[in-house]
Image (cartoon, rainbow, N blue to C red; front, top):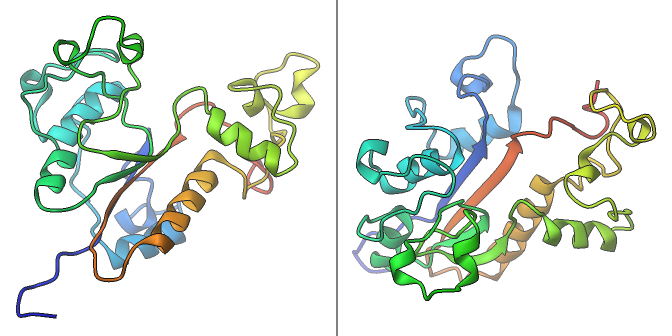
Length: 230
């Protein structure tokens, strides 16, 4: 290694609709989050980070660009992000990283840069410019459902029905404590974490990496597998 300081590895973890105070590392008097606390202790915990807007796409536009909503102009899910704005992925790429995505970014692309009829114009679940996609997990969750089938889980219900409690499906109940068909090791978050770990094992020691692990939980549907469904 030369006298030049080595660039750090960067893992950006986001969770959707997780209250910032619901971390024991943030001082919550009741909630205990030992795994998140351990990650925070080894990295950077943004204790004074606030969502700049709502719902998802506007909030992420603020996070990814560093701009207030009044400046990035993303006012709802589906509002395109103007290509003139820089973002965290493009900035990382300019520094020599290959920013890699696991999950989703929910950024509608600037239509002026796309051809008429481009399928990306039909969805607000676009990928933030600058990211290399390793494992996309949009709303339909088909990639995760296919993985569940390989695990021996009947995922034929599809999303979102697979997230309904099995015991409640027959009677049409939407609220209850019954668990879903998948286990705690088979959640969408577990799937993405496993894909990230696999990718991490492929990285060369000498090359610094940048990964964005974007979990949808605890965003609805509010259902958790055993033994957490009490």
